[in-house]
Length: 238
DNA sequence: AACGGCTGCAACCGCTTCTCC
DNA sequence: GGGAGAAGCGGTTGCAGCCGT
Image (cartoon, rainbow, N blue to C red; front, side):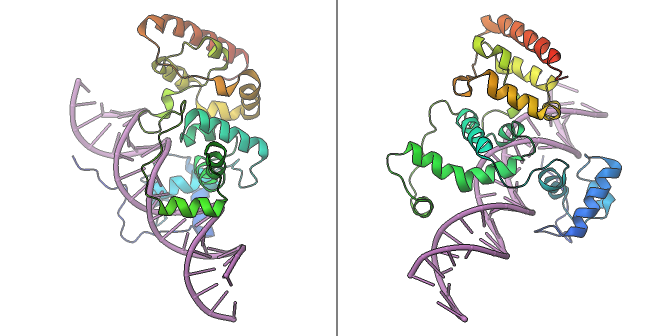
């Protein structure tokens, strides 16, 4: 088939964004809204790839973005969510109001990964020791810890955190995907503080399990999802 | 002061998934 | 149902600044 490149690479700016470029992008999106990223640069008069515009907007220019100063609580949550979800950065970011997947990914790679490894491994290295060793040693990649979801196989929208149904552990990924569509990330972020509190208060994340339930449990899963929707409705999520 | 290695982060790349027709 | 384009995602890269020697 052959994929058409998202943009012609010729004559396009690359690398760090300048203040005027940011301004153009922000103004354009204020006027026309997000979306149509492929056409956006041309329409806005930017010499950038559409992907680049999207990334810049989502990670830096979007209203409500927090930069830096990741709190201890956020750090703890990142660690716990990573333990649960693996490298599902967009999912993790969705639970951290104002944080982006890119920032969390970077923060994990530069700060938390060392600590996570240090806690787990039999030998502890200082940051420099660990990183220099990581770069030199070409051992096979370590097998993922038990309970960590592999990053590649499934898309994030197949996973949902359903506080009210957690204790029953009967949620299938397929059914969960349906509820995820209804309970979108944007809806969650409108309820950022509430949902975060709910998330932290109402369930023990370490015990959270994602199950591939057999067909016989689909009905029960649907009941749980319905119950969840009712509760979410009552809590003002929709 | 100069140099080299390390670190952190912004941005890019390529693949997967979604959506529309 | 299938193809094509659009959007999303995670891994990787590039580079400026920091730090130790």
